[in-house]
Image (cartoon, rainbow, N blue to C red):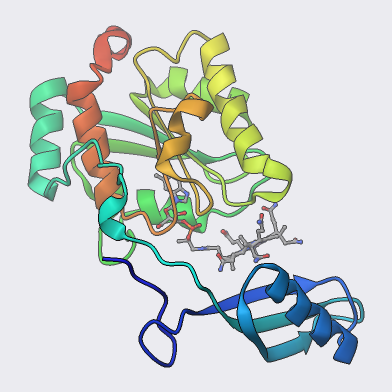
Length: 251
Ligand code: B12
């Protein structure tokens, strides 16, 4: 069934857009916002909010109607490759497969100082009603915090005999998140540590389909819950046969 956005009435196609233009707040700025939205092929545009952001910028919220429709049943939706597991299952799989704790090193790399997302995944307290990885007795978590350089991650992987590395990137200006994730992967490869390691990246502007391009095993995006990451790690222990290399390090 074809569907269309719903605003005031079914199928009116109303969409809300927000953006900032690099011009001073004025009637001309408002007209520019309306014209821009018309150029995007929205009809009946209305500026419902306009606010100066300092002397040279203006923020807008604009409503406009789209003519486009979409049939959700026609889409090919990527399936998640791993099942979501309960807390006990995650612990059991790790215990039975590894016969020791899974060692997880987590860091926010490069210049990025946003640690809240990484802590949400790693810390005992967790996020959105889920406990973080530290809560799992079969995991040992080393949280390196923010602005960690790739060589420091390499050292930590060697020192801790890590099975998994979790890298967080929140700032995306000039694609810094992409560059920083690649730097970590390259440093691990150069040190001969990539094979047998579960390499996971995450942050609000990533999506799982970026894993291949970045050379990561899994990428998590906005709103990730710690239980999803725990489930993935348990799945990866079984399906990615992590551990040949790691087993040797732990021996
Ligand atoms: C809090 C905050 C800060 C705090 C950070 C405190 C801290 N200790 O983390 C402070 C004040 C220090 C800060 C500083 C800056 N910030 Co700031 N900050 C934010 C803010 C408001 C919230 C971020 C947050 O905590 N989200 C909550 C967490 C739980 O969500 P999350 O990070 O998305 O994490 C989840 C997922 O993404 C995922 N995830 C994240 N990492 C990982 C890793 C793995 C392995 C996995 C599996 C999952 C995962 O799981 C998490 C849970 O679901 C955002 C705006 C926003 N509303 O998002 C701006 C924001 C991120 N900041 C921004 C900017 C620009 C900055 C500064 C550059 C500002 C400046 N000019 O100084 C500096 C940068 C400092 C630096 N060197 O990094 C911009 C980034 C813009 C961009 N596109 O890059 C944002 C988006 C604000 C904005 N709209 O402009 N910031």
